[in-house]
Length: 335
Image (cartoon, rainbow, N blue to C red; front, side):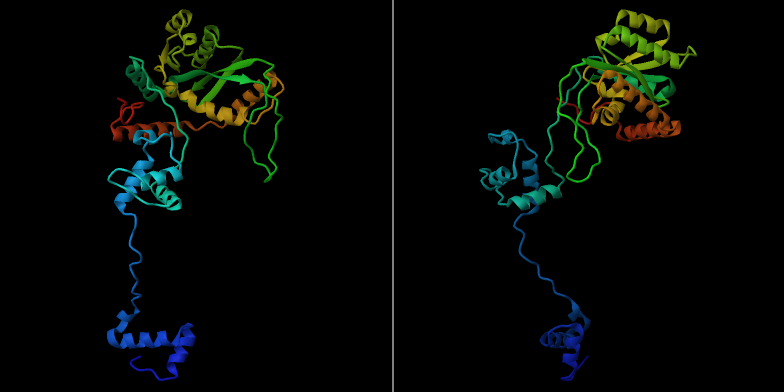
């Protein structure tokens, strides 16, 4: 390639489908510097208009409530955020378009979400109650049960979701009259065997709670102690219930106030609502109750294997140990 005849350059240009002048330029540069001529010599492009510090400022502003920055609204829109960044009276001003702003927020995993609420327990014995629930769950999983009411259950068309042809959704009648009253599903859950059962009642009451606790005691008729996790509700801790529990070696482990999440049965009410209640249109409570118990039979027949449950408990305990944080304890406590 040190020299090329007049016929060689057109042949090379046709081979690479390029321009003859470009081919001659490459040949001359090869004669001057060798294979280094193949370096594409990328240009730097247009200088960055938004620096890394600007990106950090944009993200920090987007995650800050507008009222904190003196703006008269409760949330940002892209237009409002871009306008505030461009006309900020502070030391940092950033001019950015709405589409570029959207890309930057997406890059830093900042998404538009619904606001959630939370409550911190004001129970003075919250730490002791959570510690006891964790202890019995880890030490005696085969003898730990959970109890709670699921409801209110009403007889009316329930909105849900299902697979359907595009543009032809499954429809339910828009009749929302509650003509049959409400019911409460008194649910019992075995932590060790991952089984769920219960009875549908007209209302919450101490008598119905006691009946449910007796069914839990009957699930372990050997007379050894059992532990029942339940909410700190007045219908769950009457004098008759406490006396019966003391006679039958049943320890009632109450969750702290505003801490229903500590009850392991709560995690199983979501699927119950999703696959049984949502999308239903039962004519009466009898049919609705029959559908509920049909689902429970299917669910218990497909319960997770005890070895899988034990492995999950060990993994959760390992993660909490690595983080040096007890179960139920937040990473940063509220002031």
